[in-house]
Length: 453
Image 1: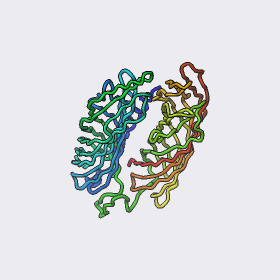
Image 2 (image 1 turned 120 degrees about the vertical axis):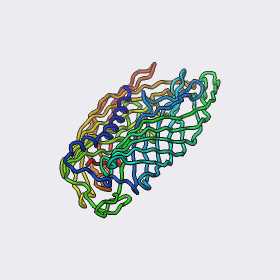
Image 3 (image 1 turned 135 degrees about the horizontal axis):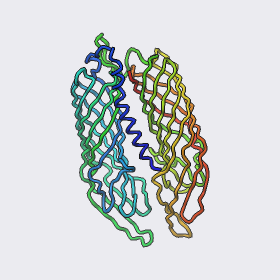
């Protein structure tokens, strides 16, 4: 089973978030129209997270190799930080990342190419109506880090320049859900120069090497959805002063019925890394073993609430000896109840979590391995299949600190208790090996949370 639908769900979730403020305002028709000053973002710091679809315009790499999405759609994750200098002009740092494959038409997958862009940009915006709706334009020049990694086939390599200059132009629209949180969409073009690229193939029997060199261009268009967070507070009509990062007065957490969306990022430690036979998870591999996700939740009153967490981890898998030969996708859907106990007037809020959900498991990027048998190199094709889904219970604790009424930073430590699933390791010409996997883990996640009014 492919994980394409999971990534689509992730994008749809962002789109849902971007529209979340609209129904709430429609129901609040008895509230007087907000003044423009309520949404004044002049002199304010902001942070944002974004996700969406990326379209590389020219996918030719070298020889018969092409840059292709790692699923049906090429996804981009990113974010950044910025500062609004006056009512129109601001500056920001845009960071975006994609990780497509380099695939040969005749030999299959060769490598992955992580393209991470860092662009200092100028932003021009203008307020419409009461300031709640904010179109904008951005432009800047920065650099792109292009890391070719994760060889798929023995005796084949692909390479290109590790860094290049990159330009960025974008147009977008923000809608202020509250004076401290905005959601929106953006259309962005990342303009790359031509750069040298090469692909090398070696015949494992004869040792003959064939090399292709060509020109690569990674220029792309992206359609993005984002959430923009404003810490601190703006100046108010009653004389309240602007603060940069922390509001100097409440309200913070309250007993109101209100929803929230959270971003989660961290690491999960597995108690048992043996997932059957000679197969192990969490081989060394950097970001492939980190957990990323989010949550949608609702506070019912001053203590009780509920949320649904969506968490995604891509685990490297390997034999007991040798390099990794694939990756296991772990997608967790975890409904939970939350009990919190506000302190310091609602600014510091410890909480407990408990719930039960499911984890959907599958594998991808399963690649051949080169092993030595009877003194000769032999290529084998291990195929690992985990049972799915697994039942997951969750208990955990956390704490959040409110930067203002709508934005908080926090830490949550969950224990994920997994049911055991059956696994299989298949190799052509060899007996199928069966086993079992228990992915019970202890996690530690940083969370950024935005509350709706």
